[in-house]
Image (cartoon, rainbow, N blue to C red):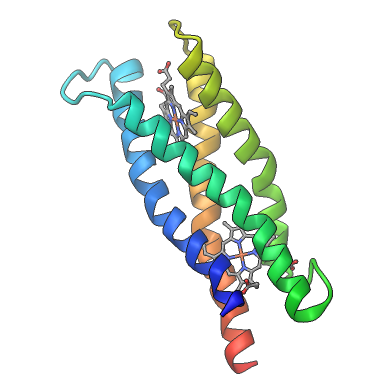
Length: 143
Ligand code: HEM
Ligand code: HEM
């Protein structure tokens, strides 16, 4: 049972991240491509985006804890834990840059672009984790 907490939390956050990325795309089209056809729900993007990134960070620790609980060792899942480590700095940057842009309102170009690009890469890596984590689950069940 304990071993399911991490995969379920992460998979739900991956689903939500696609919606948050969609909201960011609406902002991108408005700010850089001059498309004014859809409004950017600022507060919803900030709340759901923070929920996604906080879940990924918290459940990272839970994943380590679960692996330790089951095998008395960590960093044993190969590609899955390697990608997870690469995600950590991007999670910190996504949260930090998002909080700055939310709290100190200003006309900006570079920071939103870096935030959007970093977080889009993060969503791709999280989708990859669905696959590498699925392999870990498969090996746990049938390996
Ligand atoms: C999965 C997480 C997230 C994704 C995929 C994401 C994606 C994006 C994208 C693509 C943009 C458009 C950037 C541009 O116009 O160049 C954006 C803008 C923005 N994001 Fe996020 N974001 C995420 C999390 C967050 C978080 C956690 C916060 C705040 C704590 C946040 C706050 C903002 C703000 C305030 C803007 C508008 C900035 C501006 O135009 O001045 N985002 N986001
Ligand atoms: C998206 C779906 C994901 C699935 C299905 C999944 C699956 C798993 C499984 C089955 C484990 C073994 C422990 C356990 O069962 O609780 C695990 C461990 C772990 N996962 Fe995930 N995971 C996912 C996403 C993520 C993401 C997004 C991250 C990083 C933010 C991550 C980071 C980790 C870490 C750090 C461990 C410990 C690995 C080790 O010490 O070798 N996982 N994951």
